[in-house]
Length: 109
Length: 272
Figure 1 (tube, chains in turn purple, green):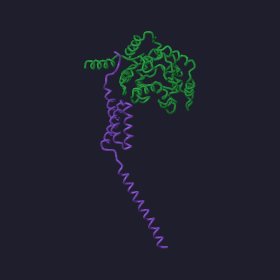
Figure 2: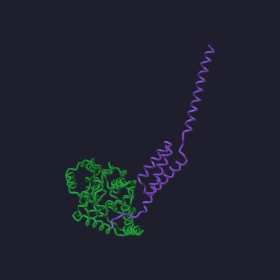
Figure 3: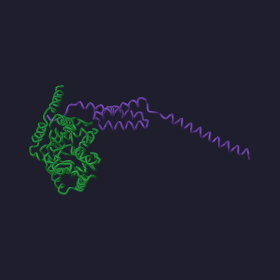
Figure 4: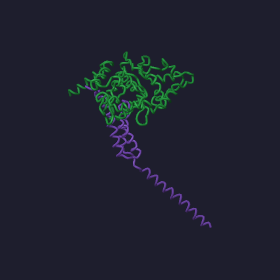
């Protein structure tokens, strides 16, 4: 009877140990998930800064604003390539919006 | 290079003519291009270019399908504040024939005051919270009725003094400044290509544009105040719009309304 109890106890404890190890492995795998590259992080920060500046100058284009949103969404998905692509569009379109302020006024001649 | 210099020279010139000269220039330009359209018909905007569209408009305005919305605005206008006063107590003549004087430049406040701002001043002076100017269910409906009390009044905007002129120039610059990814200014359509067809619609003329707001637009008669229309136009050229009721649009409305001087108001009308 005693040996039976010991065997059951051993099985229970070994289950905890195996379970714990499994959890540890999963956690380690989760920690190894790819993070956004430094290059993509920098591109996103640059795009956010450009859009902020264009907003402050009241020169923001909707295309710049929506590209930034797409870049931020891509960053949540840790998608480096998409972040770089959309951040570049946001950065360029924000710069063009600000440059537009210096263009001559229009009118009929 | 020379053409660039020429354009720069023009932009300086555009900002140096007086408000009245600017208005006369714009009216004369339309008269030269469309001599058959009478000055008083400029208030019909794009409808003035199409007899069919104008006839449809007149049929619709005989029994406006959005009349119940104007009634909601009348109820807002007539509802007493908690202190027993009404909007009519805030304006001369009970609010009749006043809108043609808005916007004006307030020397004390050092800024342009629109009719919507005056309505909100009336509310706050009587202990009520101001409406959000972009809220069509409150401010929009209120103006849909209140502005009709000035139907027939001639637009009569004044620009006097340095502050007023600076606000006018700010509005003028906004009107002629290219915006958005499509690189259009307001003037690109409504001055340079007035009367031409963009997609399926005629482009209305600048003089008269400020006389008929708010308007009920499209198949579902969506209520648009003038500044909501500015916002929509900005979005159409892919520019992030300014704040409705903010300084930029207020100054634009000041300029825009001055350019409609001498034309009769007709509020809460249908527009495509």
